[in-house]
Amino acid sequence: MKNILVTGGAGFIGSEFVRYMVERYPDYHIICFDKLTYAGNLDNLLPVSDEPNYRFERGDIADREAVRQALETHNIDTIVNFAAESHVDRSILAADAFVHTDVVGVYILLDESKNHGIERFLHVSTDEVYGDIPQGFSAEGDAFAPNSPYAASKAGGELMVRAYHVTHGLNTVVTRGSNTYGPYQYPEKVLPLFITEAIDDRPLPVYGDGKQVRDWLFVHDHVTGIDTALHKGEAGEAYNIAGEDLRHNIDVTHMLLAGLGKPADLIKHVPDREGHDRRYAMQADKLRALGWQREYTFERGVALTIDWYRDNEWWWRKIKTGEYMDYYKRQYMARLAAAEGSSES
Image 1 (cartoon, rainbow, N blue to C red):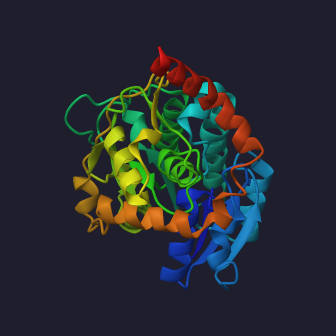
Image 2 (image 1 turned 60 degrees about the vertical axis):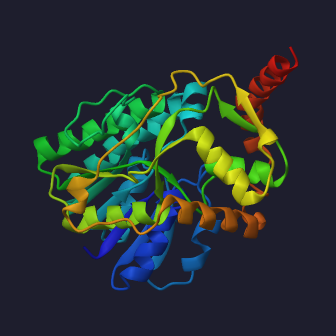
């Protein structure tokens, strides 16, 4: 494991992984391969841009020739695949990009990995493949029950990974992360959305009653979990990377407002998202058995995240224009208007 292609490495979790690996493993060559869609951002990689063991290549995992060229040019022996369309709300508005990247793109990566003799292929997935979990905790052997187009596309990609391991003997590992948060997260996701909106004293659109339950994982802990699975995971296996810290969305929202010193009346309960899963929960015993452990409590992680967005307006203000605002209006304006109408009646 010397030449690692990190696909989707300019995104939120992918860039954290690139920064971490470049620093932790100076003898590895880390090549970031990213299409630079709306959520891919080279600003995320500025801290390592001058490091001698880092390179960036622009490319699409669904472009077979671009993948083949990257593998050959850099003599790649290992792939860590973060590349994905990842936002549930966008998958409800338009699912085609999710199928293209999360299924077709994964297939092309796997096929070229087989042809190139890749030594290890780690695929980054999500707890959402398990679907809604009314009680208990999901384990790696549980059946998939995806409920959004995003979750279905991730499940489809995972099944393709399994098929290439079983059929072709490709050395694959899958990780399934829970709700991840932290610095450099694109502000369509709930924590950076609410933090940046609250900084500007704008309303926070909470879906439904806000009693949905999510399992929260700080991005650094997610990345160390991937590192553990990459180096110690058994071929053909999947590993949950769980925060094991369950919170209601409404409670998280109040926690953010308290940390920012903002009033609770910024909260606006809006009509719920279609097919919104009520509860996600995983256990991470299998990964802990390989030596992984979390470093960050939710309270510490949230405080660090709030401070980062406060201190780095240069990063997020230029994002929240243009395409972002078009998406925000499509997703939230009618809901916020409905919430205002309901509160006046």
